[in-house]
Image 1 (cartoon, rainbow, N blue to C red):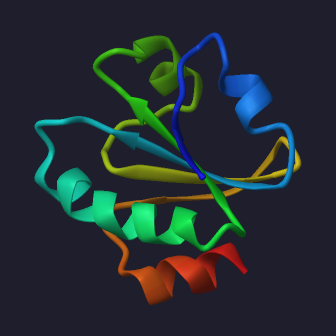
Image 2 (cartoon, rainbow, N blue to C red; image 1 turned 180 degrees about the vertical axis):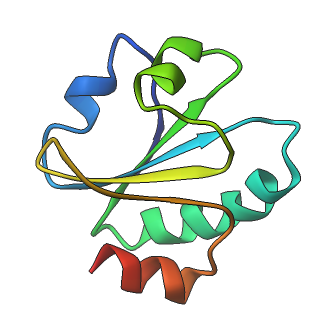
Amino acid sequence: MLVHGNKDNFDSLISDGVVVVDFFANWCGPCRMLGPVLEELSNSGEVKVVKIDVDQEEDLARRFGVMSIPALYLFKDGKQVDSRVGFMPLDELTEWIK
């Protein structure tokens, strides 16, 4: 499942299960490269992917201290367990989530 998040629905989107949050921007080349990888990951049905546009959701980006994009944050049942910055191929991303 891939959804676009915002400050109003963010906390409910990450509250249950394994969730990867992608802080991105449309003008960011590595973010555009990561998009299809995240879509493929979300199609597996095991992980929810929440995309946050840093240009539209500056408060959320600030809340998590996002300084570089793409920034990926891993949540399990609402708790942040890890974060990474930069492009990751699908196999590396899948291993990181485990």
